Length: 183
Image (cartoon, rainbow, N blue to C red; front, side):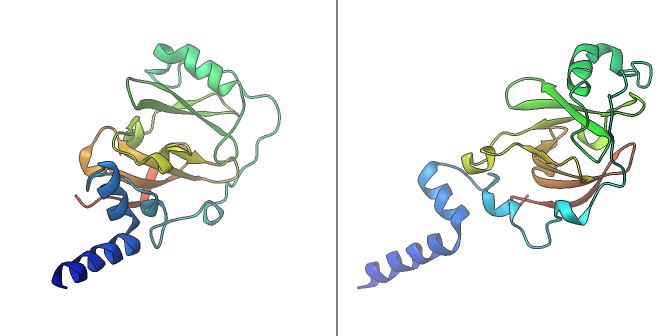
């Protein structure tokens, strides 16, 4: 009888905590980023941070002199920026690989061609992220919003592992909320 009661408690724990259940059946651990981290209470939403500008027209050519690192990435920046704004009304988030499960990030202004490499998000590593989270992108953004949602470790910093919410200031990203595995 005692063994049956204990197994019932374990089943209830798995039903009430999807992350614990997923960890037990798939080999994930307590540092894994799960879907319930994206649904944390108080998480900012795109509609709470609407863009102040809207760009129409042809994007400006990338201004390689606007940042010392821009010339090193001229091809990636040019290809990405030529597609036009995809973030915060008039900006384009451009990303390119930096190894397994890693992306470098820059933001280009479609009106001036200025290139920004945000200090607190120069790269993103997304190891130990549960499969259901990876079905969507690890960088989540909209053209009509200043909010950027990032899944993983910004700048490969283990203490920052989780889901980070940034607001674009016009020249840099400001962290406004973070949730994720216990550190």
